Amino acid sequence: MKAEFKAIATLLQGSKRSAARNKVWTRIHHETGLGTVSRRDFLFSEDELNKLRQYGRSLTGGELDPLFYKPAGLRMDMAEVHNNEKFTSHSVFGSLMLMATAGGARVVINGEPSATQPGSILAVKPDPINREALTQQKLIVIENGSLMPDWSRIVLPEAWQDAVLLYRGHGENARDVIKLALAQPSDRLAFYYDFDPAGMAMALNWGRGHILVPQDWPALDCSASGGLSQRGTYRQQHASLNMAQAAARTEQQRRILAFMANQECAIMQEHITARALPLVAIAG
Image: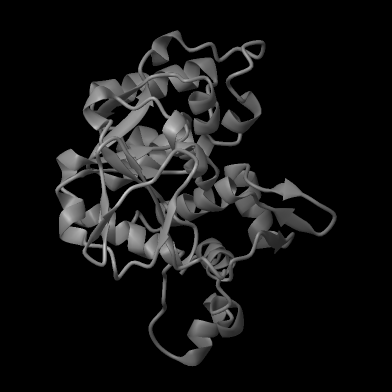
């Protein structure tokens, strides 16, 4: 197993946000541009942790997920990947699913339909959720947890205005989100991620469902003076752009990625939502 993959698995499974500036992490930093350099460590934001996860998957051709990787064999092999004490020290709310209901959508919990009001979300354990009822509705996976309390401000496409919104998770709950998304019919599944190469790479990696992007994306102002795009963020996503371009399956997806590359475009979903930019669903 590549040292880079093991290092990323250790970081993610230990719920850490920093890594020592050793040779392995320096190589990862130079390749991906991820991590803020401090005196002795690389510091990672929540968004960067997810991009590290995607980079780790790319190192194995998408076959292994560093967040859930469990090596077979001797205890020494396991010790190379993570420390048991750190691995089990999850966040108090790390096992809860964060959900919201737009329009007439409902989450059935212990047999009772539940809805959210603007400014509120549901924090639910996985087992009480009626998964069969969920598959009969539309489900939108949201990249950034900070957006969830403001879900009512998202300008959803008309066909997706009655939908359950689900935060993608970042720890123990990420496994349950993956299970729900994989069980969801493809025509009732969508992903709302950042409009940047990393967001497109993550959405395309699913190989199913739809991707929500700004409706008028060709007219977006990604210039330095536009105040919408973050060119510094874009320039840290060379590996993600390559992954997204390799995963693109439709002409529309390729046009969007070409636009991002030409304009050096990286727009966070919070900015899209705050400016009330209408979204459109494209094939995933």
